[in-house]
Image (cartoon, rainbow, N blue to C red; front, side):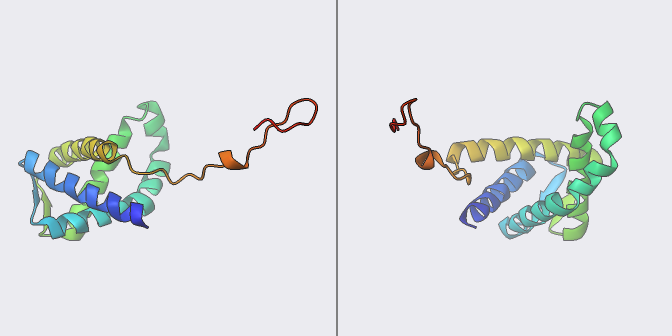
Length: 136
């Protein structure tokens, strides 16, 4: 839960930075940036997999480049759902916003080095030699 809140905050910062860099994307305040980050997270969990499944042949033929357009659709859906606090002027601005948002999220997460949630089982591993004596 803690990592989710940190990632949501980082995504909100990335949304604000990307909106300042692009003149065609307008975010009203940091509060709306948090709402945008939460909306994008929910859309990426529930809607994006369906879009990927429906457009799988095109995605395969384009070698995955069509996923950028799926991200653009997700941005446009979020702008429609949120309304006045998040406005995108055109599809090209949404396309550029999705690319810039991905880059900024990667940079911010690498700067903070969030802990991985995988469970390490190295402590449970026991190594024995051929005679049955424990080595490690």
